[in-house]
Image 1: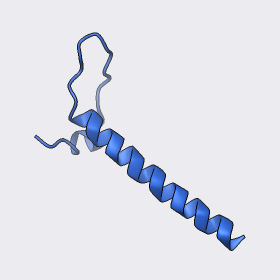
Image 2: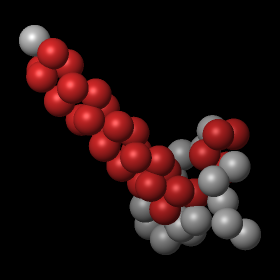
Image 3: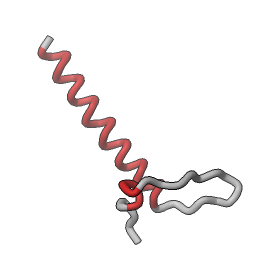
Length: 50
């Protein structure tokens, strides 16, 4: 049971890191014009690098 909990925590950390990286890329990417880009949340806007 303890091993299952540790694996679950590691998977959770990986998913959180992946989501943050994806949100950062999305925040720094411009809409191509033909693709729909919905309004971003304030938390995503804070990830901008410019």
